[in-house]
Amino acid sequence: MGGITIEDLEHFHNRRVRENRHMAEADRFFHQFGDLERLVYANGALDERIKELMGLAIAIATRCDECVMYHMTRCVELVINREKILETIQIAVLAGGSLTYPQARLAFRVLDGSAPSIAATESESDPT
Image 1: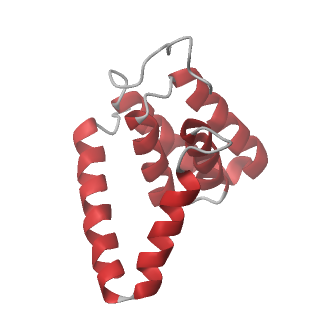
Image 2: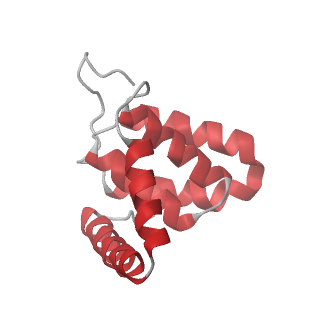
């Protein structure tokens, strides 16, 4: 099965940034919501990698394709290893049941297409 490539992720990211910017410029609510999202996902008591894995699990469990793409893109950017992403997908499917298989398959397409960017192992200092 063909994976979603790094180029696909870049295209998705660029479209998302462009559309979010448009919404933020059109209405203050969307600007404030974007600020809140950045604040919540920043390093804090929980490392941003853990937060992204949590976001991925929630995206799969709530069956949001665009959210899965966003969080998988962030997992690639943060170089979260394959094993951690797989365990996150498993938890999400366990929580959401078979209805979440389409989103799990989407996450796998990103994972498989981005394999060179997703390290098999991470450094010893990785807190996630």
